[in-house]
Amino acid sequence: MTETPLRLLYIDDDPGLARLVQRGLGRRGYVVETAGDGPSGLARLRVETFDVVALDHYMPGQDGLATLAQIRALTDPPAVVYVTGTQESAVAVAALKAGASDYVVKTVEGEFIALLAAAIEQSLQGVRLRRAKDAAEAEVRAARDRFEALAAERAVLIREVNHRVGNSLQIIAALLHLQSSASTSQEVKTALAGANRRVMAVAQVHRRLYTSDDVQSVALDQYLDALVSDLRGSSEDGVANQLSLEAEPVEVDPDKAVAVGVVVTELVLNAVKYAYPDGKGPIRVKLAAANGTRVMLSVEDDGVGRGPVEPDRAGAGLGRMIVKAMATKLSADWAQDETHAGMRVTLSFDRRLAQPNAA
Image (cartoon, rainbow, N blue to C red):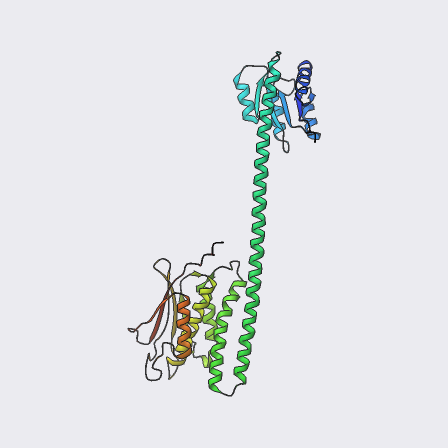
């Protein structure tokens, strides 16, 4: 396939020199068009496409520098080689500062054509490099935009999944509540009510994920605030009215939030059941950032402690098994504070977000 010849616009008020350039560069494969002054050259540039412009400095009415400024103001302007008949370096410097890619001192001898051809080729090479760079940057921007669009779509899909999971968990919780209401056995009612609260603890995490722009982390302090409010509101006869939360801002991944929520639910239910046999009393949940990446969680009451009513109040039976399992999931250190007058269980775990597996 024949390569399209490069188009040059030569702007000069000397028609004899313009013909010399036209013939000389024509033999080198260029298509050379001419204009006798700056305004007529600009008129052609606005309606035609040229690869490069050779522009004379001294022209009547509008000199080369004024014309160069208007060429540079065009959309996607061509490269400009500045042509001057003076040896004054100040003219060349002014042209280069104004945006010319090169300059040539014109003479009537034949070497002027050769020098002009070399300057044009060098300028075109610069244009090619610039356009290649612009194309590469455009591709990078397009790739980034595609990635951001995919990431946004993925986040929407994950939020939708969390929304559906949260809805499903709420349905399960509602079914457990209905089953509990229908049962005549107090033991069954108690077991189903506990299961209902455990399910709601997990559902609360998903509710926060699908209403948040960040699906990779959960504000644990805000999550516990909602969870404690749910536990307070769902307690029978207001026995958890004095349940309180003191929490510092902490971010964790959703899996850790679920584990913390289940632990808090179990320990609060344990305190509600055993701490105050003769009435109601305070139950406190505390969350604090400690030692850089560590988190301290505690659930405490001022009740009877480990007494004759329940010899192993730190979480008897199923509740104790659940707390131990969630503590293992958190890789947490947990203990009962023997110095506390009532019951105080503490957990310490790493709050750092899980890193995605390397592909």
